Image (cartoon, rainbow, N blue to C red):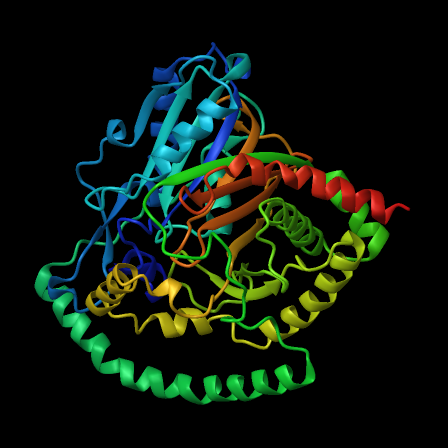
Length: 462
């Protein structure tokens, strides 16, 4: 029986009609490299064939009766590729604006929980004869790293080469309702024992955190972020934007300053946010704070679960005008934050997430949204920023060369924008997802990233 981990299941419980918990991406494809030429039928057939042996694409959730425990994964006996791969076309002139408007609309549509939790939209009529693919997969199924790895099941290094990875289509047998109830009751009995084991190390962690805070070596604290126009209750409307940066420019700054790629990315994000808010006369006097997801896949001892992530809080230096000074402040803060984060057990978040109750967690989330509580308590964080390592070389999706891959993460009540960056074949693709009411003009924000990087590079080379 393949039971969802508490962390995976939490993304199901967090979901409301306004707070959709799927991760998305926009792939821009040069279909001129496809052997035999492009057609939608051939593209759909390739996706069908290459997803056939990957369990993630063919499984759906089965709820435990009475919702007394986390759901389980089972194979969809009635899987139909036509319910997951769809054909669309952009209106003329088929440029950036038309694509992001369609992507924002698709991002605001929930996934059907009665089927495998993914969708792909093959979008024709994009600029220069290219085709875009908009993908959507629930966070209960993938995190940033596993989502990037999943691409390898569909991609190859050459147009006519086999996929980079071979899937495992092994499914557990389907449990009956009585078995699910019985196993869930046993799991409930064991939870007090698990809680007792977690209390002592968690108490030690709190003590160490207090000590780090007193010495000034703790990561940024939640609930200390300033309030901005995108820190409130979100709606179900989405806007999307994307831009490109040079990975070589990022590496140039890293070498010149002795920082890390992640330091540079956060500094650029801070510069873009500072510029955006300053032009709107909304720039707070204190720095914005971001939640930065961190993969613990290489440190986790847990076999189960698709999500192997933790998170740290990072100050973005939006109160610092000089980009080099901002980078220095972020680099120092990130060193402390990493040391602080590494002192936390890799599986701590996963272990405590086991106690998320299916019924009460979901009801609490709906009450939180309905009462607009995100606007009544101090701001936890201003936004989410993810830095996902991508392929260093060009990949081919169904024989079509991927020219760009823009990742898009979910937004939350209290933090209405999400910035995700992914390196790809010498570029850094920046994707921004936002609640439309929180940030109506995403392009105005995301287009500031290349300018912020150039300002940082120029300052670093002086």
